[in-house]
Structures are given as C-alpha cells and as structure tokens.
Amino acid sequence: MGAPDRMTRVNELLKREIADIIEREDLSGGTVLISVTAVSTAHDLRRATVKVSILGGDDELKKQIIGKLQQMHADVQKKMSRRITLKYTPVLRFELDMNVEAGDRVLAMLEELDDEPE
Image 1: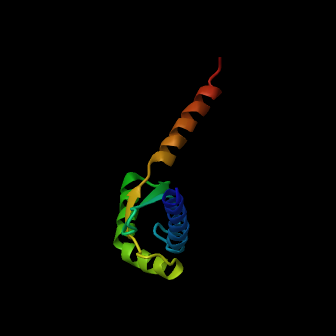
Image 2: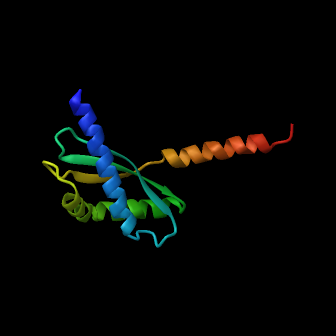
C-alpha cells in the first residue's frame, strides 16, 4: 500500500518542479501556454515520462517545443536534482498530451449546439 502512494507523491512532486523549471524557460516567446499535465515515473526511479500540454500555436510549433524540451532534458534533470532528493534522478522523456486540446474541442462543439436556435 505504501509504494503506490509513494509513487503518486513522487510523480506530483516531479510534475510541480518540472513545470516550475519549464515556466522559467521561454520556449515559445510567450506565444503559447505550456503546462505539465502528468508525470509517470518508473518504479525504479530511473525513467519518467512527462506529458506536456501546449495550448495555442500550430502542430509544427508544438513539435518544435517538444523537440526543445527533449534537447534540454539533461538540463531540466540537473536543475530538478538540486531541488529534489531522490535515490536516482530519472531520465526525462517529454510527450505531447493532446487530452486538454481534445477537451477544449468537445466543449466548443457543445457550446455551438447550445447556441443553435431550436
């Protein structure tokens, strides 16, 4: 029972710290909103997948931002290791999270339906 709770706490702690580090970097020149939506850490703490939502911009810009995040993963890990004490600092892999964007599209469709005259 302790291990899943511990992993949840580790994932949330990593999510908060990575989001703070990314926020300090100006990856898009302020043209898009970048947020860390989830972190999934392997049980051995050696690897972590970071889900990132990017609101605004086209698909090409989103790919560029994910590419920049991948390139700077070692720097993010280094900064993270100074803030958080873990047995291992996980190697980060960034992925684009499309769930927030998909949810926005569904909400927009529902609003359109509400606006239609009966």
